[in-house]
Length: 258
Image (cartoon, rainbow, N blue to C red; front, side):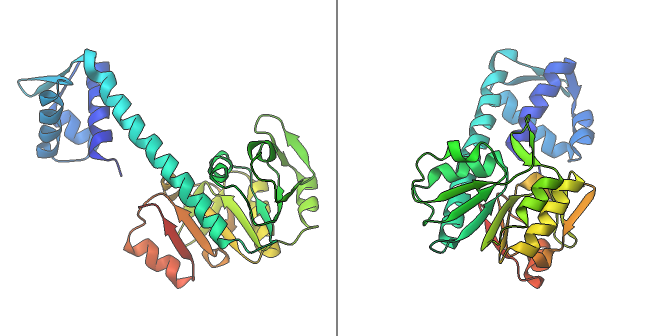
């Protein structure tokens, strides 16, 4: 759901692009009441971001960038907090000398930089950037799966990667998912990613998925696993009672930032 700050920034941007916009146009665009839009416009006007005139909003371009910087700073702070939550959750869930699969994900990779050790675990990954991103981890052994190198994303892929993965057994697997339905489970953008997640469910004692808020709105095509295959969801958003109840029925533990 769009926050008031994000909506107000978008209003200022829309007005800047179109020159001016009427209250009724904005209310229809954001699917909110006219009263909500008028409150937004009062805020923007009082703070010098726009000028109101006869039911229209005109942009004040000199301070528009200040609002954009404020929203960006807020998002970056949230991302940093979410990274710490991921790192702390992963660390607390590790047993000494575990064998762990860590999937290719820039979010997970950056999150683990908060840690100074991984409890002497064996780390298996297809992320070619992971090892060099964690120079502070001295107590663990790192292994990269076989497979074909995706040079754009710097990760291993293809059927040989799947065969390579079958050599291992994991105490836990940590995967960031791009599409999550609390009733139907995890979906993936590619058939290969879906196959990999299904295989990890077979090879791992515990499946941990990292789910950013937008994943609940995505509708990727390839089904990967049932909610009951997941042991833990780490998310940056408030899921709501209905979603939490649905996950609880499948014994999924929820760790959330909000």
